Amino acid sequence: MLLELFLKGINSKIESIDAKRIYFVNVLSLLCLFTSIAIVIPYIILNLHVLAGVCVIFSAGYVISFNFNARGLYSVAKSFLFSTIAINIFALSVIFGSRINMTVFYIPLVVILFLLFDKEHRAAFFVSIIVVIAMCILGFVMNNFTVSSLMVLEETEIFIINTIFSGVSLFGTLFVCYVFIFSSELLLKGLAKKNERLQQERNALYESTIQLNKTAQEQEDLNTLKNKLLSIISHDVRQPVNNLLSLSEIMLQAKISEEEIQLLGLRLKETSIYVYQMLDNLLTWSYSQMNGLHPEPIKLILKEDIEKELKNLSYLIDQKKIHIELNVNDADHIQFDKVMFQIVFRNIVSNAIKFSQAEGRIRINTEKADNKIALSISDDGIGIPKEIMEKLFVNNFSKNRFGTQNEKGAGIGLMLCKQLMDANNSEIKVKSNLGKGCTFVLIFPAGS
Image (tube, rainbow, N blue to C red; front, top):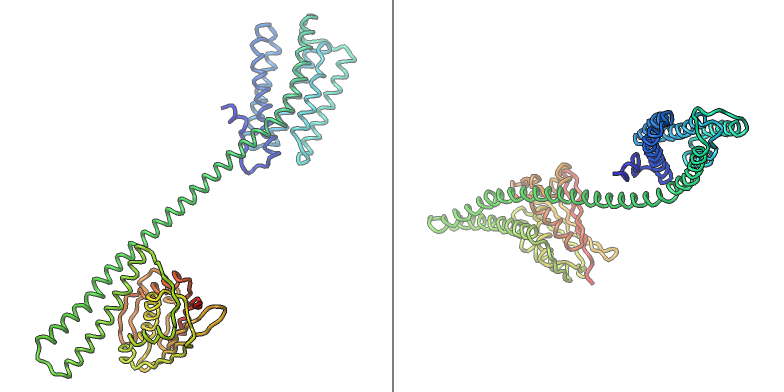
């Protein structure tokens, strides 16, 4: 409790030397207050009512000084405290007259003066100097001229009072120096450590709050994705599967011509490719959300894997009569997970086909630089609007849109591509010119 009173008005923003002065004012104000209160009762018992009254009056001054300091009015508190102490000494000098040596208090008064004020409080410092000079003049008068006391004191009482005042002056001077130099230093170091500890706890709490908010947001995002995923499965996958069942039923039971069987077979293949690619993306993405991605990079011969995937996509390419321009060097090798590369390349080329007009053109080129291989896939299709470009690789299914022949998609392919590329220390970039097509650039580590 007492320690809290000594530290009133001190906060972490205050510099060390200023904090020491605030602490010093608090200690000195409370010390003078408790001393004044403590000697009121003995004065009353000894019928020294005048001295008791002086103590009570100046006790109020010390309380006011402490209150100013606690409220942050530091300059006012210092000036008021010094004035109160000086006037208290002056009042006692007048009451005791020449028979009591009050000049013994001038040394601690001067020490207090220099401990209280610095160069930033020059006005208060010079006023205090004037007060000290006035006190010195008063002491000179008291010592060289006979000034009657307002009280009747015996020689023994005078000796005792002078002895007590000399001891108080000596030990008081030592005490105020100790308080300012040593006690305040130790206390402020402890306070600094406590503030540092509190700051660390506050930072830890802040980081925990951020992490909790992040986790909550991630959970909310995952719930949204889960709901959308269920919606895709229940609608976009169910319908093609129903189509497959219907086509199979027709082929098995209806009497149809060979030409009609050929058309139904093509439709069956188209639906099967769509369902396969969508399920492949959904299952890969779902697994990554639950277990994370754990790629196993190997050295891939880029041209061989590209040609293999283009062959798997040949039905979609032929259906739209897309012209493929392949310009990949036989010596181009990349370091990448094989299955993940197939998923990424298949999704990018499928999108290029989806958003290309019939008889459009898709160009596939590679370029090697700085131990990296950049695979660019360009089309001359409808391009990507700016609002979709901004959220192309984020967890947001709202970017799904139909192709040039109303081809559907789940809106998950590019998001999955980004995750797979990141997992393999690779990059994916996109440039688009609305109405004129777009280019996806896949940057892989070159195979060693």
